Image (cartoon, rainbow, N blue to C red; front, side, top):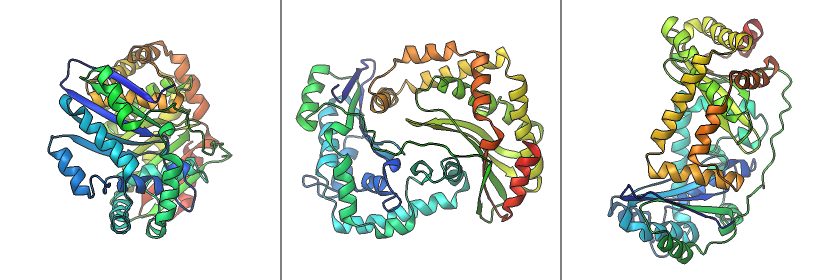
Length: 414
């Protein structure tokens, strides 16, 4: 399979170019944690042709482009969205950054400080940091449990040689996918991709430690912080990417806490007034997944809040869901999905993510049909599969130090 995917959309005057590299924080080890994210930053710092970050940004700002990059646990992405006449420039700049970056010593030293401040920003923001804390618990001892941005100590010390070693290992043509959506000529786009990327056969990178859960009892992770609000996450191991239950679990996350009419939002916030935010998320990786309930709670009523969150979970496990809830969740997810597909960048991300994860893709229509096929029985089955008492994880950011107190809440109410 060639590592390109083209999706013409002639109703728009824009083009979106996305390059996905099959690497991320789960490909790191304890000594280089954060290196994938560090490389993402450094690819914007200059090439031989465009020697500074200003050279790159000036050229892109000069055409009014949207551009950025991201690092996740299993992939790294670089993208440019611009008007249709600038397709060649977008491919030129992306290929130049990805293959010809200088990794200048001065820029590496300067960027250490930028990344450390980014880490501090996340650590200072409990709403952001609670996600990392719950994943650290669910994936305890595994690379999936580490922060994508890495630890400050590692960022301060990692050498240019170690950075380049990781870059050379994963930034190969056969380990990346190039996607274009928008208004363009397919024949012309193929020639440009061949010119700038010298496309090859894509080989799905499986160079990571497969996660195997050894959890036999509930876990509690605490971060002490002087907050006026308790930030709490309840997490369970979910299901892997493209699992037979993945759509059912996404629908369950909507029913329990995916919108302002969900069970937990109506009970914990609207009826009891115990929180400002409460939501559910279901995320999938190649070999596993995670289901989380996240909330910012009144710290004087934490006992009541945890009691009622667990009460809603137990009610679901006993009685399941109604047909009306299922129908509403399906329409909600399909509606949000179609709104995202109005943007050419989201369209190409939808296809390329599937290709880089599995080497094949489902169309938008087939994906929507899969949601339609889910039954109440499917949702109850996956819920009973993952919401087990000995597999519950509780992460808390608060002023409190007493881990035993939170362990007792699990035993008392779940």
